[in-house]
Length: 329
Image 1: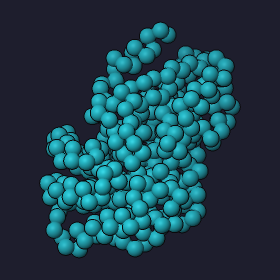
Image 2: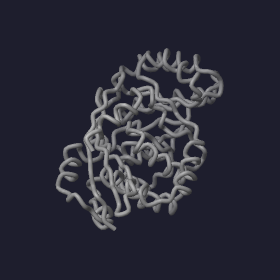
Image 3: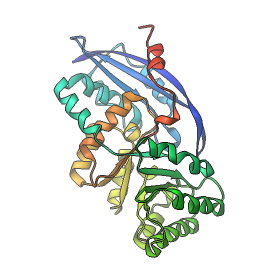
Image 4: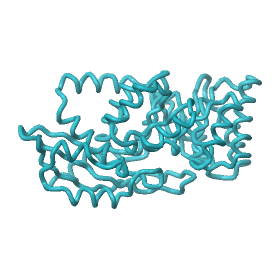
């Protein structure tokens, strides 16, 4: 099968800066793809790289798109190298969307929309003001960035937050690899003590990526030393990294960002084979990549964990922006 291939780069400004241990993020850049088959059927895809998280750079993705001919084949789509995981996801999900029938698409969409979502709180004290708005929108699981400010300050805010959140809320703490081994122990000990003392009625679901990627053994040790769960994120950004961590003994939670993980078909195969405990999460993509990612989550999620796609409040509505992007076609 051959397809007419078109692409458009995009830039979307965050309504407020996203601050993590990696720094401040103000503009989301990516590429929208469109494949048109011989019968005129369309398939949309998106390349949304995060180079500092483990994917290719935007420029590498653009270079790949620019060197492709106007007509591409299945063989080209399924031979994109592993060093371009966001490209693999974008092209393969566009191919899937164009090739699947309407009935199957609707079935997948129905499953995807039945999830509970985790709402992303801003870092620092702003979380104390933001959670209530998200609660009113239906969120019952929240993620809060740590490892951004001094640990003493963050622990004080954490103390306020856990006594402010309503009963039975779930809270995830995301360090983005920004803690030292001593700081990670302190956070885990603090969370374990909450369970032992029973002083609050919320649940600390897990601490996400407490240590840098190169300190995998440290996270493995920590996971065996505390009751509070640890989830890997940056350590398993791509499918290759995910497989390596599994082979090295990780049996805890894997945070999977489909937009940069790589080939959806290879990801399916790995998850079906190993039945890992997953949390599917956003890369601040547009609705195009988000729908493809949610379909994967609907198929592969286990243990009924909230998915990390509660990020709509970081952007303006998409409709007008998307029409403008493609108005010259």
